[in-house]
Length: 369
Image (cartoon, rainbow, N blue to C red):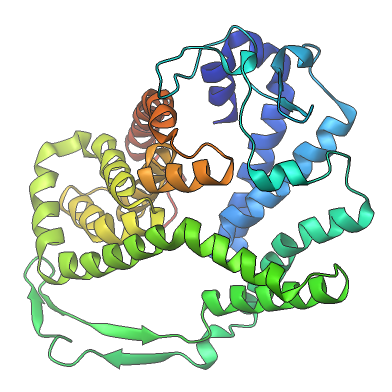
């Protein structure tokens, strides 16, 4: 993905100049994600992989920089220089139809950014800046290893629904059990947030209004996404218990041996609509497994393909684009961002479908049992 991004947005010239940092970013992310998902748990693969990849890139660019780095700079208000698309590269159209390259026009900065110092942070500021991410990772790892969530977990058979629906496909009743988990991973993140807040009060001289403001800003950016995910999860339960997922799985299995290629696009569609990889899995996870069993394919690979396919549409999901644009001062430019990234999302999805076909039919031994 880092190599593709370089080629897509800066051309082969950009790849020639920056391939070492792309290799460091991609390899550190992939290796960390593999290790965490296989030996720690499913809660933190992306969080820890992103953290390790970011650290590796920061350290790497301290000792290495591309020779043509000046071609990638853009002038921002306030005199700050930032890496961006090189001058003369493909233009990102704004809502007025202007095709001025990013490198030749000013980019608005959020109000909060303009108030900050442009100088390098000192050691204390650096530690406080990394602290939230490190604490979240550490607390969640402890939570998983100590199985804290299991201590208060309760399984509640849902009245009037548990084992009342018969799955003719699998010749067994469908269990409807609600897992009440007050000490789940979300609680671990809440604990990490409280610890971070206390440290900021004691060391960073934060004020209560600072914390309240951060909570308000976060809610303002994410409340629509939160509501969307809640409704999508509810829809997923309806989707499963009404039999729609299994009926659709049976129908889609009629495409035959090429199904692994299209399995990626099911996840792509679900994530585009919901904005969430988790919601995509909730919607189509059972469908993918059902179709795989009908076609004698790997249910594990098809479920993983649904998740991977969903990731490829995050870059064009309206919810994600809106959230990202609002944090970098580009609110109102969501249409331009989606137009610029849509074709790349499709290309990556096609490449993923080809990889899945190869895994299923040429190297099935690579699929976990």
